[in-house]
Amino acid sequence: MALRAGVAVVFCYINQVTIFVACITINEKRTEQNRHYMTCKVLEKSSDDTTPDCYKFCCTGRKPKSTREAESFLDKVPKWILPRLFAPVWGKIIILLLFCVYLAVSIWGVTQMKEGLDLRNLVDPDSYYYKYRGWLDDNFPGGTPVSIVFPDKMTYSDFKIQSQINDLLATVKSEDTVLNSFEINWLSSYKMYPTYDNSSEANFVTGLWSFLADITNNRFRNDIIIDNSSMTIRSSRIHLMSESIKDSQDQGNFMLTMRNIADDSSLSVFLFSPAFIFYEQYVVVLSQTLQTMGIAVAMVFVVTFIFMPHPLLLVYVSAAVAMITVGIFGFLPFLGLTLSSITMIHIIMSIGFSVDFVAHICHGYMIAEGGSRNERMRNGLNKSGAPIFHGAVSSILGVVMLAAAKSYVFFSFFKVMSIVITFGIAHAVLLLPVILSLIGPSVLKPKALQKTKPEAQSGIDHNGINNLALKVA
Image 1 (spheres, rainbow, N blue to C red):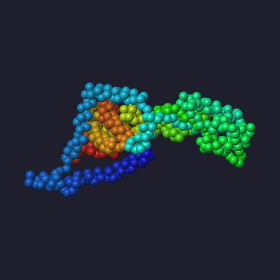
Image 2 (cartoon, rainbow, N blue to C red):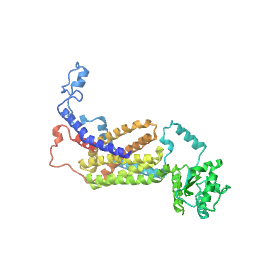
Image 3 (cartoon, rainbow, N blue to C red):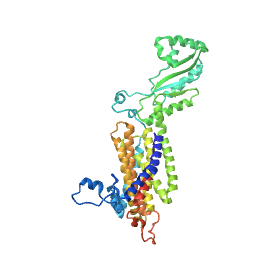
C-alpha cells in the first residue's frame, strides 16, 4: 500500500509539472486575449439592461485589472484573518499557549496509546464473522493453542530424552499465561498403555503402533510421524493451551516467552501457534513504525536542507514536522485507534502531508519583503496563505467521503488524514507565522532603487505565479 502511494505521488508530481502547468499557461493566454473562460469568445463591453442575461454571462465582461479582482473568496479570507491573529502581542501569546497545551495533550496521549489490531476490524461489521467473534469473546473467552514440536529424530525410549521433555513441559506450564489443566501429550498417554515397552527403540515403536491402533487414541495419530523402515520416530508434537489473553501487548510477550523457552531448551524444539502470525505485528509494529518514520523524517531534513534558502528554516520545518508527528501518535487514543500494521501505513504517509504545509509558509516568508518581521510575515501570508488553504480544503474533500466507509482500513485512513491535515494547517498558518514574526530570518527590505515594479506595469502582480509555484511544490 505504501509503495502504491509513493507511485501515486510520483505520477501526481509529473502531472502537475507537465499537464497542469500547460493548462495554466493556456488559461493565461486566454485571459490576455480577453476571451471568455467557457466559450472562448472575445469579451465585449457590458451592454444595456435590455441585453439577455445569458448573453451577458457568456459574451460580455473584461479581464481582471488587478490580483484582487482575480482572487476568489478563499484567496481573500487568509489575507484578512491571519495577519490579525498574530500581529498583536496578545495574539502571539495566546497562539503559543494553545500549542503548548496541544503538545502536552499529545505527549500524554502517547503514553495512553495502545498497540494491536482487533481481527474483527479486518471484515465488514455486518459480516457473519464480526458478529460471531464478538459473541464468542464475550461469552466463551478461550486461550491460544500452542504446539511443542520436535522436528528431528530422537530416541524417545531413552529415559534421559523423556526426562528432558518432561522438564520442558514443566517450564512451559510454570508460566502464568499457560493452563496447567490442559495437555494433549501422546507420550504420557502411551506410557500408561499396556503395550508400552522402552527396552529398545524398535520395541517402543512397535508398542506405539498398537497404542495408535486403539480407537480411543485416534487423536494422537496426527501428532507422530514414524519411519517404518528404520522403526524410529522422525518427529512429534505435544499440545498445550494458554490462558485467555486479550491485550495485544500481552499476546506478543506470550509469543516471545514461548520462543525463549524453546531457545533455552537442550532439545531440538520450537513452539508454535497459528495465532502467532497475528502476534508478530504486535511485537514489531512500534519499532518498525519508529524506524520507518525516522528514515522519512531524515529524508525530509535532507530535502529541506537542499531547497530551503536559510538554515534557520530547516530547524523550524523539522520542529513543526516533529510536533505534528507527536500529535498524530498522541491523538490516536482519542480517535479510538491503535497502532497496528494498518494505522502504521497511514502515519508514515502523513509525513509528506505534514512537511507540505510548513514548507510553503516558510517559502512564502523568504520570498516576501518588509521593513519588519511582522510585515514580512504578513506579506508572506498574502503570497502563500491562499495556496495552503486551497491545498487543505482539497485534501479534506479528497478523504471526507471515506467518513461513511464501513471498512476499518478506509475509515481509519479518514481519521488519520483528517488530524494530519488539521494539525498541518494549524502549524502552518498559526504557529510558524508567530515564530517567524518573532525570531525569523533577518528582515528583507524592499530594493531602494526599484521605483516601479514590473507587476504594477502589467496590472496584475506575480502573486498568482508565486501561488502556482507553491501549489506545484
